[in-house]
Length: 237
Image 1: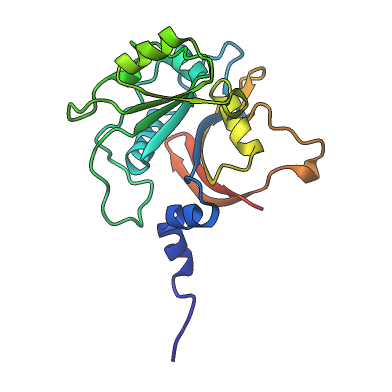
Image 2: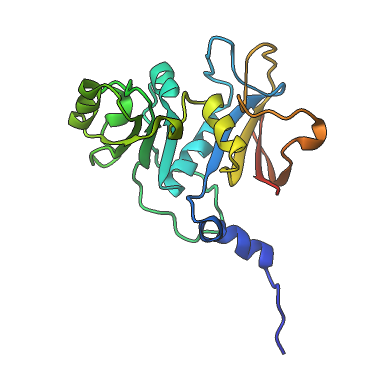
């Protein structure tokens, strides 16, 4: 006698990255964002430090250890100068995975049409064990050669793409572009008890005309991290 479907939900969660890659033939994409209660990820000036709590930021760092690459737009690099490194994690965002991967920084991917990433940016710093940073910069064809050469000398691998194939900006614009194209597999959102009013939303450029056309999400996690609510959800459809 054979019984099917035992622990199906747990098995799917444990292997969600593998299943997504096999199904669509593209990398698994997790969109992470900290939001105010009125759905803003930054003030009008672009300032976003810090919407989320320290506990939420520790979870965000843990995601970086478990996933092999982190992507930002050049706007985020120029505004925040992120290091995109990992710390020794004290939290497992994927509890069903038995063994965590070795502690190392992820591949750092930057979308940068005009090669504006500074060669002195913090993302070029060495990893937690002194290993050279792994940086991949996508630029538009015809990007200034001197800037491209400076990035290569800093240790980046630079790949030129047709300009219509390079996404502009970062943060909300990058998130909006990925959601618009159906490239997001999972969202990790950290909701903070703050109101910004005017500010930048989660997904700029992603637009529908009617509520019925909104992207629906299947909620998979609700957990308090201090005063922040940690949500994980999957796009439906």
